[in-house]
Image 1 (cartoon, rainbow, N blue to C red):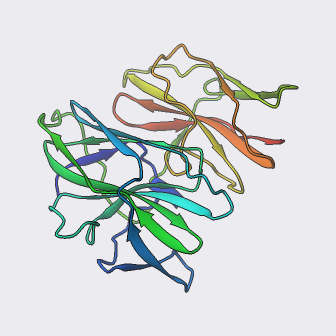
Image 2: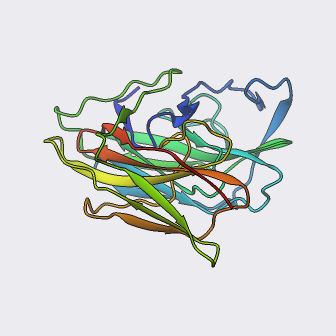
Length: 252
């Protein structure tokens, strides 16, 4: 397996990376139910190839009562069938509003599929082929693929301090104190929103926005569902270190 650095990375859930069974059916987490795996070539799943990785974008799943989670499945072996039988879950989130995923990759060819896990089935997109031409710099240490949750680092007490303000229109205003580059550089902010999660963080719980300006300090969430939401700001530094601030819970 080639070197890979996850950026929807920290677990990927609990951030979990796991091996698929290689069969046409898949056992859903700790549930005893066995879900059929179907392929739907009409699912929108668009790769945007970067110099050292790839970003994917897709459309939000339309049926919230059926939705369980998204899975991004990857392999570096050309699949023999229309779905990936033997690969890893490179990213997953139970946030239906999170429709982006990004990771850093070494040079090589990779195969991806987006799978939408529902309460009754697992539906996967057509396989997308991604070719990265540039090798990772030797200074970049790839994060291993494992079933263990990758820990984030707690931000300094004066950094990534989040305040959340509901508006009469139903939107939610997020504002935070900036991340301070201590020498590792800065890549992006990831505002996170999750429900029924005590410790939400990127990339396990998805993200609402991808902000590349270190001076960014606000974001408006205009798609928050009804219920209690947990918000947090995470920042990724230039060495793919993940830093997360305080958690704010709000009932809408």
